[in-house]
Image 1: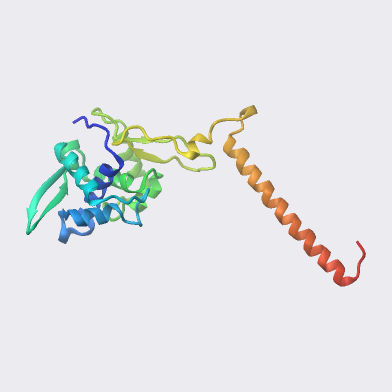
Image 2: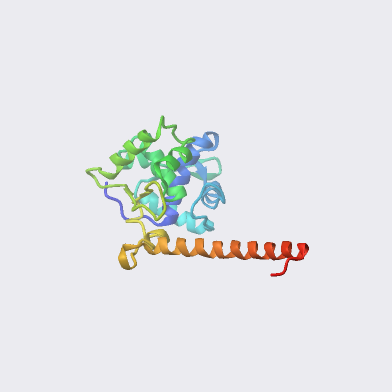
Length: 219
């Protein structure tokens, strides 16, 4: 199934539903109130958002039209569950990876493995990388993509594509090159190092002057 690009809030709703299916199984499917609270969590979320109940309900309604969310009646209120695996034809391992990216933004495979542990426990980082490779080369359309390596980073990060191609980050913009092929990010880092060295030298000079005064040594 080819999906339209989802909004940040819609991917957050899906990520929360996948997460809570595993972490609060006793109260799953979720009520609207529980889903709003999950979307607005201050921890394990990047970016942190402040969505209203009406906004979350609007996201749910759109996701229901796409069959990604299923509504059910439970007690006095409606409850909601995700349907990602069936709609996209994915194994549970892949759903766990995408949910982690939807909840926490771009991450390295090692970070994904650590943050994904409550949803699925991967044996090692290479297992995560294998599923990421599968998701990035699907015949039905890639769902994740490997991002260009940020200046100073040791590993590449991955992002989901359910909201379309990821927007360039500040780190990515900093890769623009200066004369002689030096990255602007590298120049900024060098300037910070120089400023720090200047401050340290000033502190050393001040301490040396204090010691010389105490010893009565003329400067």
